Length: 429
Ligand code: KE4
Image 1: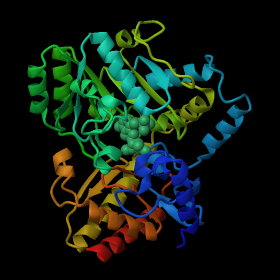
Image 2: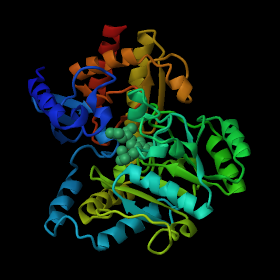
Image 3: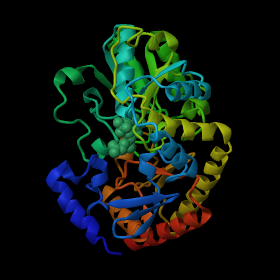
Image 4: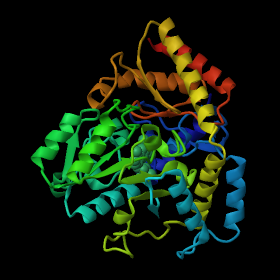
């Protein structure tokens, strides 16, 4: 497998772009080696600039629930672009997508479109602060909500992968209002609330964590969070940028039967185009400009090209709810194959999966929060990553991410992946 053109491009890219990439986690820093430059994606496959083909389990970090370039998406984009890409004026498609999301996710009574998950979460925090008049908020160690200053404290995903969970450039003032709790530890939340009585505007959480690897909430954890927030008049924000429409048509909140006060979205609602959104209770959302005083804006927010992509993806979901059974069957098939391999190799690495989000941790202890996740042997993960890449399997170039199965993955893809998984582990253990 030659990667000459990727290497040349990477050398060139580093002259003009920090680290040669437009998002750090793509740089292969934690797994070693140089990033592969991709030229094409179709269905479950990606082809790099040297012509090597991979079965893709990143799916652009979550957006590609249907794999690359499903027909319904291609045709709607070709059609929409005929009428221009963006006007900076309201269009019908924005209303249709907003209405559809409120139908699919009942806790969302009103919604505002933005251009990334980060914009969605930072706007949700501002809405909660403006609505309550309080300044502090609680996040959980290892959860990642994008790169707004006050989130980059003990954050997950690329921040954790690069070992800078608390980033330089974040001022003390900004960090002062960010309180840190432990995932799955309701007492750590209660302690913070006692110490900061009536000062906490919001609690923001990934209802299923996907940025410290996949970490699943304990049975009552989210319910207890909901109860505490209602009692203390704290705004509960579900960050469903990754889980929204990935796990069910109504997201993780449908699976757990919990209504947050605000929800943030991204990834799938743009089907690979830059879209984020925040929405929820009408009384909070009516505080957002121009109807209310809390300012929030965006030149390309709701642009018709991205909206038509999102609307076609969510319409497909609405008309084909059976895709979630399909995703469950394929994902559990893959998980079973991996577990079979581990048994044969007498290695019991922790494997967390929910729906089509999965993560194998290079630790044999259970992973249920940040502290247990970081016990993983990231060097061994790096070796595994490259062995799988050599065998045509494209995984996240970082231990603290999720593997995503799409409806486009065939059982032949899954069998190839299970075989590569066995051979890769055998070669490094
Ligand atoms: P963006 O600003 O990257 O669109 O979204 C930030 C974000 C917010 N909330 C959650 C739960 C997220 O998972 C993300 C972004 N996810 C990472 C993948 N783990 C983005 C990948 C990257 O940084 O390149």
